[in-house]
Each structure stands twice: as C-alpha cells, then as structure tokens.
Length: 414
Image (cartoon, rainbow, N blue to C red; front, side, top):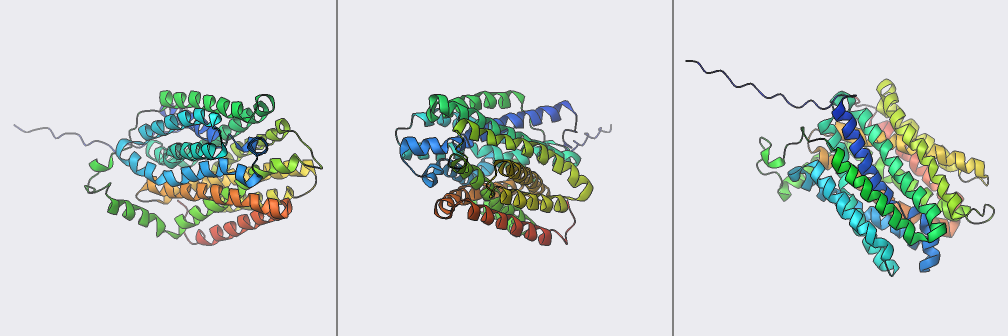
C-alpha cells in the first residue's frame, strides 16, 4: 500500500491589486496613517499659540513636534523587533492604542515640561506604524504591486497629517490650543479603531522563532547582524540619508512658516495660516503619481527629479509674495512626498533580509531629521530670518539628489 504524498504548501504571493484583501489592507493602513500623523503633528499648526500661552520662544515650542518625532525615531527599531515576534498588525494596534491614550492626556499638561514629556512618549508609541507599515505591505501585497501600494500608503499618510493640522488650527482660534489637541486625539481614536476593524489577517508573516535556520533570532547578536546587513549597503545608506535631510527640511518649513506669515507684511491669523497645510494634497497626489512614473522611467530618475522640485519650491517661499509662497509650498510638498514614497518603498525592495529592520532604519533617519533639523531650523530662523533658512534647505535637497544620482547609477533598479 503506497501513501499519498502530502501537498506542498505554496508560498504566499500576496494580495493582487484590485482584490478585496488589497483594498482592505490599504484602507486599514490609511486609517493607521490618520491615527498616527494627525496626532504626531497636531501641535505644528499651534506653535505660535503655544509660544504665547506657555511663554516660550519658537524653537522651544517646536520641541512639541521635534520631541514627538524623536520619540518615534528612537522607538522604530524596538518596534521592528517586537513585530518580528508578535506580528505587524498586533504591534501596530498596541502602538496606536497607547498613543491615543497619551494624546488624550497631553492637553491637560500644566507646564511645557509635562507637555514635552507626554509628546515624546506619544511619539514613541506612534513609532509602531511607520516602522512596520512598509514591511507589512511587502509581506502581504503581491511583489508586482508593492511600489504602487507603498506610494498609495504614503499618500494616505498625507491625509492624516493634513487632517490633524486642519482640525487643530481653526479650533485653536475658537477654544484654544488645548481643546484643539484633544479634538485631534479623538479623531486619532476613531481612526485607530477603524484600522483594527479593517486590517486583513496576516498571511505572509512568519514569527522569527519559526523561520527555518533562525533558531537564535531575537537575540541581541542577531539584532546587530540584521542591522549590520542594512548598514553595509551603500544604496540603503543613501536612502537613509535622503530620509534624514528631506524630512528635516520639510518639517522646518512647516514648523516656522506660520510664524513668518503671522508677522508683517502678511499678518495672517492662525485660522488662515493653518489652511497652508492644504498644500499636503499635492503630496497626496504626487506620491501615488511618482510611483506610477517610476514604472516607466525608473525609480532613480523620478526620485532625483522630485528632490530638485523640492529645492525649487523652498526657494520660492523666500520671496515676499504670498502667491509665490503658496506655489513654492505646493512644489516643496509634492517633491518631498514623491521622493519619500519612492524611497520608503525602495528600502523594502532592496533589503534581502530583515525588511522590518531596513524600514525601521529608514524611519530612524526620517524622524531623526524631523527632530534635529526641524528644531535647528527655528534657531536659524530666529537668528537670520527666513531666506537663509530656505536656502539651507534647498542646498540639502540638491546635495541629497546628487548623492542619490551617483549611488544608484551603477545598480539595476529593483
């Protein structure tokens, strides 16, 4: 009597574009993006109000953004190792839940020190989503559609950032900055619940302890081995540098442009300056469009062009003309999110192993840039004015574009 061999289980190929699982996954990550980025940057439209109420200067007020992103930057690597053991979705769920609780407490801070502490902890909790979203996409979406899916996810994060700022800015003029932050935290709670309800069951994830040949994964030595593999790749290092410089410059512009426009000769109220964040819609469009263009012209070409567009946009904001500033802000935002969407997606594609760690290193650079350059930009603005700040950001973008053009030129795009 012969026995029938057991069928060999097929490797999970991922949800195909247009399938129900594909749509649910992107919708879930869009909700996670709202829960994360609405809360992360909720104070950015309120910085002049926080300065006045708590009697601190622009650079100190900007720490409510910088320390939140610093907490996120520090947390992305730990979140990646936690997710390797418990899964991407459970880790992201834990992160957005903790962040929502902290976000609801922040408006009741009695002092700037307490506010900054809660914002830093909130950022650390929010780190679960950007640390894991791209790895989750690469595991659950068909490889042929991964770049477009990553671009769509980044487009969704712009909606989250935009909503947080648009809700907070007008409310601060009516009820003050504390009520505005609380309203954004409630929005984050609703979005977090939608993420939990929509996220499809993971099929491409395998816990590290069950992966063949990786019995010792999860140890400290294995953690360093995974990180070392990413840090030895010049192409990945170029992407991490890109994340640092572009995000830093981008956040510096949005942190301090409101201060400039509330002074002469513009004298705009907070409810109007918060509408500047509508420029984020150009990033929503450009991140998805850049992903489609990359399939035709290559990621390198489109990414470098996007950085040059960002540089041109920030230079326009140095002019003493409100229409020129608005046009420059739109170009800056479109260029930034196009480059970021391609860079974050390319990070996952280039990493042969340790995709979550590769994505976390990208996010470490991204949010470290937000924290450091976003804060230093305030010192430059206070000491020298807007034009030197804009010129410095443009130089960073051009140098980063040159590095990307050289490092990626001799390698086939993946």
